[in-house]
Image (cartoon, rainbow, N blue to C red; front, side, top):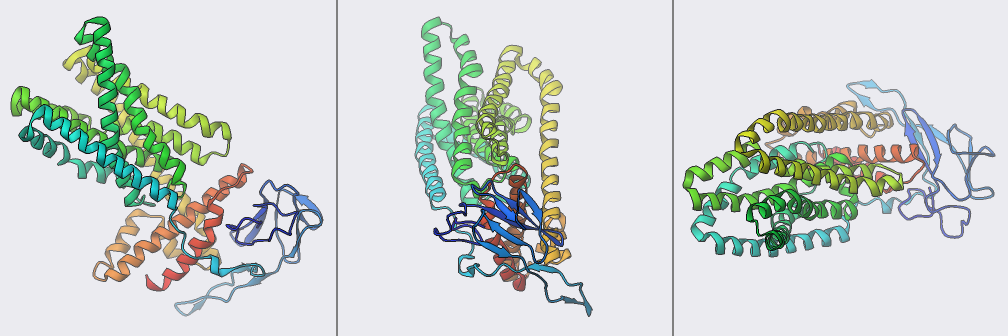
Length: 471
């Protein structure tokens, strides 16, 4: 409730005591709770100023002392009939007095976000073409084609595994495409130029080519490459907040941009080894980079994604600034450690360190990511209890939405009916986003803050209600 157009219950500018986002009422099982949203003039319930309180029929809410007064009326919704059995009446809050249903259209994609992502695609493609020309100039057309094939062939497998982590609320294909193209084109081009300049400067100062190569890999590459990749994650975090829910989304975007970068980088590695040592040398490097370390760049850049995800979930302004910066330096540290170890211990030592250190680290990282996916399932199930209690969803629909195997089975059962399949996919997307919006609101309330997700809840509820008949 407030003067902001995104509020479900809005007041015009003449309501001087009402803040832009003044207070919030949300369902909690069969009860309703009001929570003040750090309003300027406070929220009063039954003449008592309160931060949060449970509402009962007959309570009087004042938005600021002397401000608009609302009387709470709670009625029983009409009982549902399923399999011949009448369900128990469910409470429903009557809040339609100033409610404008015409505003409850489906949420529109942010135009700024779309423009930014299209710009990232254009820059990525343009710089990617420059990288392709530089590669062909160095390796020749034939070797470059072989390098492209070997590097890009396993890419769909890696991408599928990474996207599976975000299976409950998949990110938009256009946003992921923008991230991949930025990593493949812009990040690669900028890194090639800056790393080369750094190497030339060190070689000119020391006259030692080996030292120049080692320092470029250990110092320049980690800082430059993680900045180039991390910039994409940061931009998506800032302009696509509706598509960036938390840590898991940060890891997915970071993984996709890093996969684009690593794939194009591998074209050069494979091509150079094919040119210098033949097919055997190229396949050996493919084993090192494509089998032992295909997710190394993704793990590095995921540190930046985790930092942005923590900032997205936090309502502490200091954390919002420190977390992305800390994530970037974490990415630089892991990247530098990987390159430094490879440069110091040689091939035999690298295998030893790989088994002793990198394999356990990767499995720890994988375990954390899998746990976050499970936690997302638990959050969805818990938040949808509100909608089951209010009658928007059945318990079966909530169970399907919170279980990936049940989701897949439900979708597969409609494979013969494309219209129903599309409706079910859309239904699951809207239900998931509804649950995550409630979760964001819950976190914001506990921190005494605000979240844009509050204004999206009515939109998602309307979409879910519309799609129910088609699934």
